[in-house]
Length: 94
Image: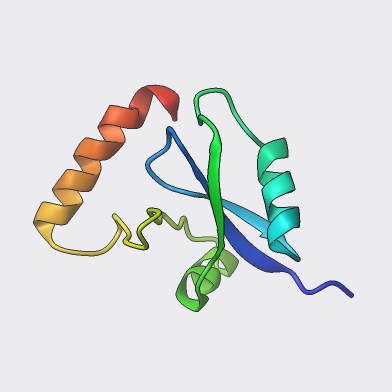
């Protein structure tokens, strides 16, 4: 039986990642490419989700994670405000 892990696929024109269940990085990359939507841009990188993110994904919670590892869901009021501003800049593509 294949062991499934969660991967985060990062796109050039999206502020946050897409969650992809897969058994390897290469499989995650091909699955992400298959789910590519207009406006996402190109696939930039695929990283395995950390333990905390995997737990949230299994619970059905929405996980937002940036390429640098930070999350707009957590942090100070200033960082949340900047995340909102960034999301509104991407609104047309979401």
